[in-house]
Length: 251
Image (tube, rainbow, N blue to C red; front, top):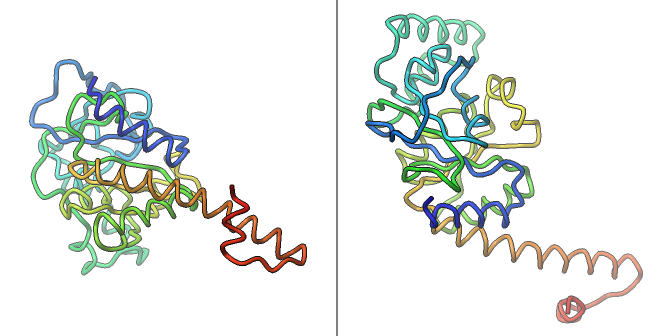
């Protein structure tokens, strides 16, 4: 177990009060012997994110074969011969619904290098250096994340839409955090991606920086929330406290 990864996971979970633990993602050329290969079938690659909340698993293009978009965004090698036709049929159907247009397809983030495997697992005991860390966050948690990410990255993460899996290559390729509102597919397949939840993807190489700022902003938000609640109560009761008086009452 890597103590640093465990510490990062503990800090993120505690600061944000996460219901699902941070999920690590890596794209190794070879899978460590200690990591089992996924055994089964899933309708979309995003399902592996929830599977990875409790165990580490290795996947290849064959495991993503029912998700041509996921194979594409993750740039997975060794895809079945049917992959180009499946991807074409998927995109054709989406274009027929005007869900995506031909000129928009090229803008969908794709992993910048070919990947032999995609390994997913809980950050706290992940056996590899995480290349991307996924967080499922509600509006309150997203507020803290947006403030922390803006400080680390020097800018606010844009809200991405379809497909949800594109958040992973977006974060990895750009080296900055990505936030995704998901897509209708991910929201159908993932119980955790409910209407009030968004997906955040943090580049692993900057995880320590994100953890520091997330912890700092979470603490600041707790203090300021108490401050504003106190002022709300005081004003509603007829008082007109100064900022200093409200701050003093926090003690």
